[in-house]
Length: 195
Image (cartoon, rainbow, N blue to C red):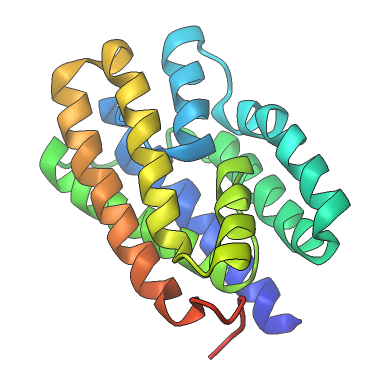
């Protein structure tokens, strides 16, 4: 239980730091629910964390009905990550790195954070939850499912952020997917447990 809490807390902090410190300054996108939250932030100036919570409600309702343990584990990841993304906005005012470094560093930090959350059977939003439900039922690697969803969200966001930010976002999401896959590779066909 303590190990799971540490994974969720540390993973949520990493995701928020990566998003706020490296993605938002260049209007990069992430995929999944975080990416959708960022799209709403860039386009309508909505808070990305709050948007993530609101848009995740239908999938969390589904998980509550069909996989209650996953629901209880994941709700903590959603709330904590969303809260931290909104609270830590602008934390990087003392430094900046270029867009390429931001994509790689931010993608690494976010990918490790999401991987830790998934190791704790938690999620940062509805699309991660969907990937976990699908992975449990089919044995498909959760990191790969998330990568596919992320790529789809990126394509939706291209017209909003422009080509330059889109290409860097693609690099960032690839990096996120790489680290998430590494941290979840031994969870295939076994459910999610600590090893």
